[in-house]
Length: 124
Length: 243
Image (cartoon, rainbow over all chains, first blue to last red; front, side, top):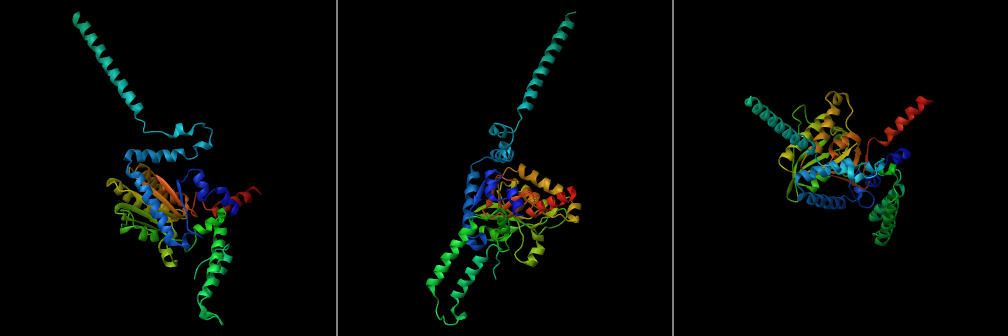
C-alpha cells in the first residue's frame, strides 16, 4: 500500500511540485483534528487572500487564467522545450476575423468585376 | 473517546498519561494536580507529534486524510460563513445529501458554498452516503454554479470525497455525463472559483468541482485519480493474469 501511495504522488507537496495545485495550507501540529480553531483561522486567511486577488480581475481574465492553469499542467514533462509559449493561449477569434476580412475582399472584388462586365456589355 | 491511527501509539500513551495527571482523584496517593509533570509530559507530547507528523509517508498521510475526527465540510461551512442558506434539489430527479450547497456571506460578501460532506457519525455517514455523490448532486451543483455565475458571485467549494458513487442507480441516471457536464460548467464560469481539498480528493468525484481558478490543499489532504487500495487491486489482478 505504501509503494502504491508513493508512486501515485497523492500528497500535497508532490502535487504542488507538479503544479496540479496552487497552494498548501499548513495544518496545526498533529493534523487538523487536533486543533480545529487554528485550522479555521488559517483557512479564513487563505480564502480572503484569494478572493481579494480575484476582485481586481475582469471575468475574461479570470476565465483565461483558469484555462491556462489547466493547460499548463504536465507541459514541462513532455518534449516541448518552451512550455510558457504553448500555455498562454487566449481565445482565438483571429482566424475567424481573417476569414471575414478575406471574404469582404472577395465580395468586393466580385462586385467590381461584375460592374466592369456590366459596363463592358452596356457599351456594345 | 479519541481515535488514534496505528502509528500514533506513543501519542496515545502520552495523552492518556496527561489525562490521568489532570484528574488526581483517579489515582491513589495523589491529591493535587502536579502541574510541573503535566507541562513536561505535554512538551514531550508536542515533540513526539512534531516528530511523527513532519515525516509522514504518503500512506500515513492517506490515513490522516481519512481520519474519523478530521473536520468535515459542514464544520467549515458553519464556522467560516455567516447566513448560510442551504439550497437543494437538481430539478430533474431529487436531492443528494452528500453535497451541501447554498449561498452565504464571507466577511460580508456573498459567496456560493459547495461542500462535499462525509458525515460525523455512523447515521449521518450513511445518510450522506460517505461523501460519494450521485448524478443528482452534480446536477444540483451545476444548477447553482450557473445561478452564481449569473449574479457574479464567487464560488468556494470544499472537496472531501472518496470518489463518485458507482452504484447501479447512479450509472443509470448518467453519472459520467453529470461529471463531464460539471467540469464543463466549472471551466465556463466567469466568476472566480476556489476549491479547497480538506480530506480526500478522489478522481472524477473531486475534479468535477475542483476545476477551479485556485486549487488549495490542506497539508495532510490527498488528491489522486484512484485510491491506493484501488491501485493495489489492479496490480494483483494483472499479476494473476500474467502468471
